[in-house]
Image (cartoon, rainbow, N blue to C red; front, side, top):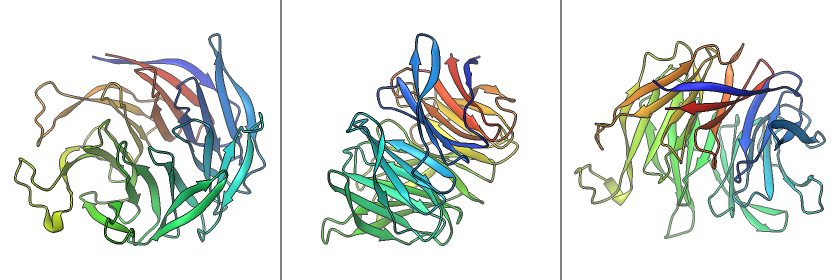
Length: 335
C-alpha cells in the first residue's frame, strides 16, 4: 500500500482557500481565496514562506490561479467577473491586464500549452477564449455558449489547442478551432455524470481525461480518433470521447478536484468529506477498459472541504492541497 505523508502545513490566508497552483519549475506556488489576495510561496532551506502578497487586483473572492507555461505570467479568476494577468516584468509582481466581459463570477482560467491562448469560464454559462496579442494585450477570440448552466472549470489539452470545460449541467465539452473558418466549435459533449462536474484533467499525452463530480464518482474518458483500431464510430470525422471507467464507492461526498500526475500517472482527488485519495492504474489495465485501484487515502486530510489538489510538475509524488479550513498542505506520496 502507498502512503500519503504530510510534509508541510501552511497558513496565511484569511478564510477559505480556493486554489493552489505550482509554478512550472515546481519550486514556487501561488494560492488564492476568500480574502481577495494571491500569495506566492517559495522554498528556502526546508521552509515554505510567502514571498509576495498580491491584494489589489480583485474586489471579491479569487477562485482560481494559473501560471503561464513560461512561468512569467500568473492569471487569476475572480467572483468580481474579471480575470487579472500578473507579471514580474519590472522586478515586482503587478497586474498588467484585466480581462472583462463575463457577466458574473469567473470560476476558472487556463493557459494553452504554447502560452498563446487563455481560456476563462463563468457562472454566466459561457467559455471565453482570449488570444495573447502582445505585451499585456489580450483579445477575445471566441465566446462559446454550449453549456446550459454555470461552467466550473476549463483545462487545455497538454499538446493540442483543444479545450475542455466542465459544468453544472453535468457535462464536459471539448472545443477546437475549425480549419475551415477559424471559428471555435464545440466538437464533443461528454455525458455520463449525474450531477455537477467540478473538475477535469488530462493525462500526460492528452489521450485520456479524468473528471470528478457532485455525484461522488470519478470517471476516466478516452479519445477515439477517426480510424481508431477499436472500431469506435467517429461521425463527421470528429474525435469521440467515451467513458471507459467509473470509480465509485470511495468518496462519500462531492469530489471537487482531480489532478492527473504527468510524471507518475497517479490521480489525486479532493473531496467534500475532507479527504484526499490517490488512485493508480492497475498493472493488468486494458486500453479500452482501464482499471484503477485506490493506492492510499487520507480521510481527514483537512478539517473541512478540500477544494483543490495539484501534483508538482517537476517533483514526482509531491502534492499540494488547500481547504475551507484555511490551510495549505504539501504531501509526499510513496508507493
